[in-house]
Every structure is written in structure tokens, then in C-alpha cells.
Length: 475
Image (cartoon, rainbow, N blue to C red; front, top):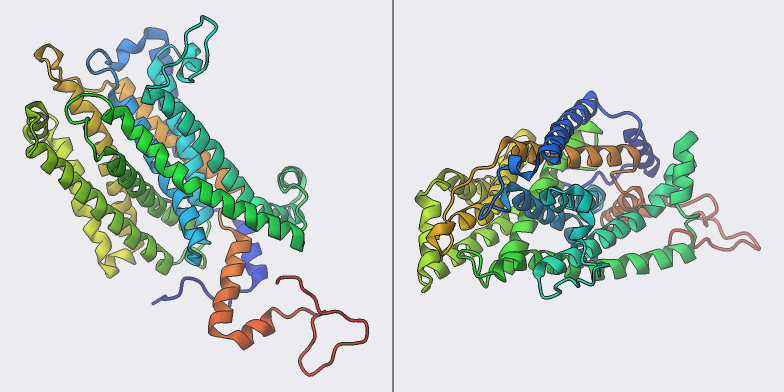
């Protein structure tokens, strides 16, 4: 049974070769996944064209059900973006080196989740030619955005988070892009030459690189937490029953981390299979992610109970009726499914035998994210169906157009992600080498010195030649 996070005897040249090979020759499953994603995106494109030509009415959106699946799915994708960059930054600061083989694709997941989320406010407008209306700019008609509205805060927070996450991802890739540049040919070599920014790996570049990467990690942690707190303010700043809840910011942040960790498990298993990454995406690392996901799931379940208790013992009678209606009303099957997937299913992560079984973890991670998507829908749908005034009571189910566009958004995210891992290294080569080096030095210092000695370094039993200076490279 594999117990170490990584094979400490792996050669550095093999790390380069394995990662570079993954960008050239994936398994056939990769191409099947790409074709599936293109088919899903095609469904969404057809639905969007139909909605564009016919009008937003075909989405079955009307007052009071004016948000529907579009905004629920927007919140889901914003939430899923949380774990990649946020966990990568936190684990980098606390020097958790088991993050090194997996953080690259997790950060990419953040960037593409945000890009997918950004489509939904535009689609929800209906009039996509007015897409610039979703940005809080000073209009030429003298109308100023309402900066007291959380919707304006959303635009600033999400734009800042997307920019910072993409920059964090890019900066972390620069040393690896230089390795790709030195080993690629044709258009790839030109692309990596431009993106590697002249990286040579000298001492000065490494010192600046370390400082910038650490500073960005420190900046991103509060930013990531504030983004989903602001998204929660879209709901909690209103007076709608079920939304005007004090615990919404931590509840949203916990839910975001939860869905992001579940997505990392899914992508971990997929990439491990597609690119034959068994030596880097190891079972012990998967176990650590599963334990982290289980802990966050328990926090999310606790906050759910706090919300239920606050509503039940509170004085808002309408909010209490709404809570009961979720348990036994028309949305009850979806609400109970959410509770099962979100609060019961995570207990599968508590058993070592299940954690080490990849097919089981793949199914469990999908069910966890199904529960988290239903959670967003159960926040939006029931409240808009049962407001304070009886004339605003309306049960409205999503149309096929909404379902098709939501379905296609998963294909869009998958397509972006699969293209990225084919063009760029999805495992950080230089950080995996650092991880191997430190593990060797911790467990077998003599062996580590022997493996990392270069021809120009002083050899044991031999005194330095006159005029020969000890090398400092790799310090």
C-alpha cells in the first residue's frame, strides 16, 4: 500500500519527461472527454440562439421568479472557484508541500470557473448586445451606478479575483514554461518563449520570483474570502424570507470551499488517468484532499443547522413557513437530495478503504457537487416562490432552455480546462523537484547530497583545484 506522498527516488529528468509527455500523448479518454464537452457546449449554444431570437420568455423567467437557474448556477461557479487559488495560497504559506503536484490544475480550475460564472449575468440579461450593462461604469446618459448595491460590489470583486487568480496562475508557471521552451518545437516553442519572459533560473530571478509569489498568496487569501462574502450579500442584504440571514457570509464561504474541494477530487482522478500521473497524483495526496473535504463538509453542515435553528426559534413567521415548505413542499425532493448529498454523503470520506478507491471517490465527488449545486438552487428558487405577499406566491420550474444552458456551462468549463492541461504543464515540475529534494534530505541526507552533486561541485575525498570556486546554484 502506497504511504508516501511521492516517490523520493524519482529522477528529476523523469519528472520533466513525464510532464512534457502528458502535453503530447494523453490517453484516448482525453479526446472522448473533449468531444463530450463540445457536444454539451453545442446544446447550450443552440438554446442561447433560440432564446436570443425568441426572447427571454422561453427561459420561463418572469416576476417573481426572475433569477432562476441562471443566477443559482452563477453562484455555484463562483463558489467552485474558491478552493483552487485560496487553498493553494494557504497551503503555500504554511509550507504544506503535498500541494505541489496538484496546485497547478486547482488554480486553473479557479480561473475557468470564474470565466464560466461570468457568462451567466450576460445570458440572464436576455439582450446580450447590452452585456456591458453588467459592469458598473459611468454611463453616457448621466446615470451613475448604485454603489450601495451588492450587485455593483459583485462586479468589482469578481473582476479583481479573476485578474488576480489568472496572474497568480501565470506567475507560478514561469519556471515550467522555460522548461517547456527548452524542449518544444514549432508553434509551442514560440508560445513558451513569449510566456516564459526570458526566464533563465539564475539566483536573482529566483529571489524575485519567491517574493512576488508569496506576496500574491498573502493578497489572494482575504480577497477570495471577501468575494464570496460579497456574493452572499446579494441575498442577505435583501429582506426576502430565508435570505436575510446573518450567517450567510461564512455559510457561503464554507459552501464554496466545499464544492471547490469536491471538484479538485474529480479533476485529480480524471487527470491522473488521462495523463498517467500515478507517480505524482498519488493516493496519499488524494487522502489528504478527502480529509480536508470532509472537515469542510462538517463545517457546512453545522452552519446549515445554525441557520435552521435561527429560523425556527426566530420571530419571522414567514421565514419559518418557508423553511417548513422546503422540507415538505414541491421543492422537497430537491431539498432532501441536497441534504443527503451535502451532509450524509461526505461520511464516505471518513473511511480509509473508500478514500483509497478511485471509482468510489469519483462518484462521491460528483454527488457532493450535485448537492452543492442544489444548495444554490434551493437558496434562489423557494424564496422567490414564497415571499411575504400572497400575490407574489408562484411556483415556477425551469424551462428546457435554462436546463440546456446550465448543462452546456459544464461542457464549457470542461473544454477550457482540457485545452489548458493539453497546452500547459498541469503538474508543476520545479515544485515537484523541490518536494522530492526536501523529502530526500529529510529522510536520507547522505543520499540526497550524492544525488544532487554536480560534476563541478567538490567531490568527496578530493580537495578543490586551485582557482575552482564552489558552486552556489540550487541553493
